[in-house]
Length: 175
Image 1 (tube, rainbow, N blue to C red):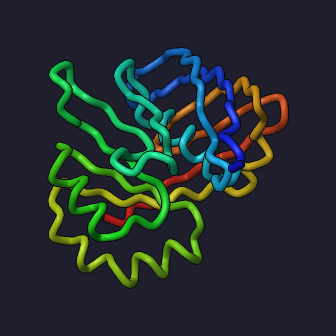
Image 2 (image 1 turned 120 degrees about the vertical axis):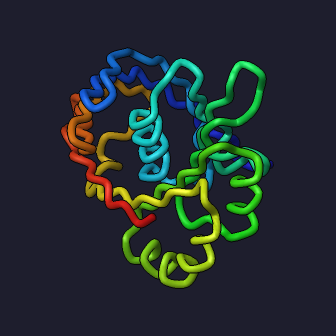
């Protein structure tokens, strides 16, 4: 029998000075057995950077027709599609066709740089696509099955605080 997902509960208090957004979100996130702690934490970071009452953390790795996060309008159309990691061209093309805006966040610099060198030129044709690299050394140390996190965002930099430590996440715009 295959191992099931681990359920993580997160209380995320967001103070986003860039967007004047101040809210607390109670999140329940399923961590796929193959998903690393770092990747799960990056999903939380992406949520904090785009938080709204309609932004949803989806199944993640287990959801083939879904991104890692998305925001739909009240009619069900996808406004924002967010994926993590090194997305293939076919998936990105599909995402750009289905959504108003697509963002891919990368987080492993060595692998992400190779992916971008190989695919960046091809991705240039997608007009509603944005790629950013997240620098977040040591973020996996904040992971737990139950988390109370505070995210402060100012000038594009996110500081994530918990009882287990603090991590600063910076963004590098690739496209």
